[in-house]
Amino acid sequence: MDLVKKSKKVLKKLQLKNGGITATPMKQAYPYIYPRDAVFVTKAYNRLGMHKNSEKFYYFIKNNTRIEYFREIFHRYNETGNPCVTRKHEHDNNGLIIHGIHDTYRHGKSKNFIIDMWPLIKICINAILKNKRNNLIRTERSIHEFFRLEDGFEIWVNCVSCRALYDASEIAKELNCKEHKIWFKEAEKLKKNIKKRFMKKNGLFKKNLKFKDSPDITQLSPFYFNLVDSKKFLKKNMDYLKNNLWYSEVGGFRRFKRFDKVKDWHWYTGGSGAWIVFTLWGARFYKILKDKKNLKQCLNLIEKTVGALNGMLPEHVSTRHEYDLWKKNEIELNHRVLNGMKIARKTNQMLKKKTGEDLIAWATPLGWAHAEYILFKNEV
Image (cartoon, rainbow, N blue to C red):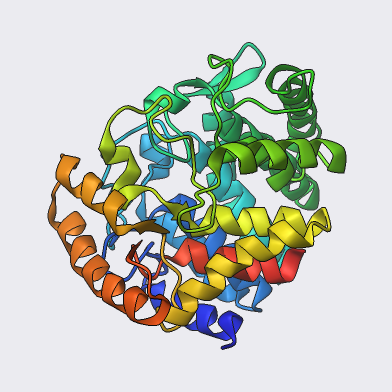
């Protein structure tokens, strides 16, 4: 199976007529537009020569979400662009939108596009700098959307924000705007402080400055956003995460250590298990490190999953036992979660039939997972 072609079909179907990009198909687990997920889908679009689709998404954000009023990119919107906010102050979204705009410009080269996006870029930069404290960016929530892990100075938000400042500086330079030098200096200062305060003496990065040790896949953020290029430090972090987050029952990376700082089952939606997006991060970095053994282990999960699910990649795959524990303890059995459970029952039968293993795939297909596969194939 050509998974790039299959992924392209999946990602095209996720884009609505108005430009919005849903995380999953509308009647499944995540029938909303999550800017975080959508940015990575646009990066995949760009590598597939579909930068016009990407531009359409950013016009959707600019024209429908009233950023100029709320002064923040929220974590999700409905299909018409209205906020569907359950948690505010996930400040990585402000930076991710800028990063996606810049990536789209790099591939599409449309000057009119960045001219049109300029007001949105300035609002997002102001939102980033508004949250600057002690030369770092403070947030309440981030990629995992959970304050116990992320409230305070958190690595993903800081790396996203730093990348966004560099990207915005490049756009300002293209437009001959004075902000070019100002934002570049801010990016340089932030990168310096990320290395100084988040990196331990042994080369490992911290998830959050308030934790002495808390294994989390986002410790790879400095490498993911090209702020650190040391293979020595990359290997140290990969070894640490493999030892602490590898889900051997399925084969793949968890997002964080089970019940380390997070004590309730809800944050393991569907039973946690091996997350496809983060396992593809692992594959990307193992390929950079020329670690064939671990690369193969990561890709085994991808191959097993798409082979059983007709070429579709879910959010994560867990054992039936862990999934059942989550169901027993879940506290938010809303309509979309019940829809997710319905699809999960079908994937369980498909996985059992094709693999002989009693596994559950959650949120199938997930746009971000397919996008990461395209990025893995095109950027490594």
